[in-house]
Image 1 (tube, each protein chain N blue to C red):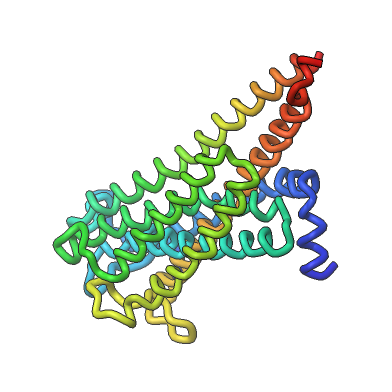
Image 2: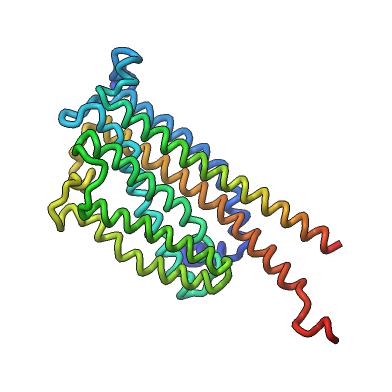
Length: 250
Length: 62
């Protein structure tokens, strides 16, 4: 089955709910195992950083959270695009299911970044390009969630949120390239494709923690999409049972 | 012993202290743990509310 057919096969809500039900537990187990391995390497085995000492170990929390906050928003934008172009309801729902987890990672990215910044830079916060655009990402998540709640999660909310997700995606390259485009207090990219600047054990710990965050996010979003599907089906059932306008006077 | 099995720490005290950065590192760990736990508690609460609504809908249908 090619990707397109696979995508539309699982566009049917019962099929997506069944797939999610099958995947949540294995993904949580994988996340737990990867987390244990990543914590062992990152907090137990990796040596201290030559410049930042032991405080650099926040990298194993901060960098996966920051990467996931951007990756999840990119996924939301992709699902929103699919939903708007091909009118696939479940694509909107997948985007809705990803949003709270993305918001959590965006908030954690900022909080752990602050905890890292205080001992290294001597300040909890500066309005530099990387930090400001990351804060904007958190506000985009919160705006998306507020819009979803404001419309009582109906079809209008689906379209409105999708447009916001697509517009907000313009912020992602700005976050990524902010440390190159502007002179910022934030350090440069942790990893540059093709040239690892970290000790192998540090890199392995970081990649394991990132993989754990990915598996956690996938499990959480799939669990949430199960609930979204069930809630929408219940809402449809309530609507069907409502009397037609004027029916009580007939 | 392979490198990935050798702890970098001499003792537990230095592990907790993290070279004077312990309060920042462990606060970060606590924050992440609390946030991810809360997210799943919120999901469990949402599932409970859904089950209650489904049960109410079943009751109305009868």
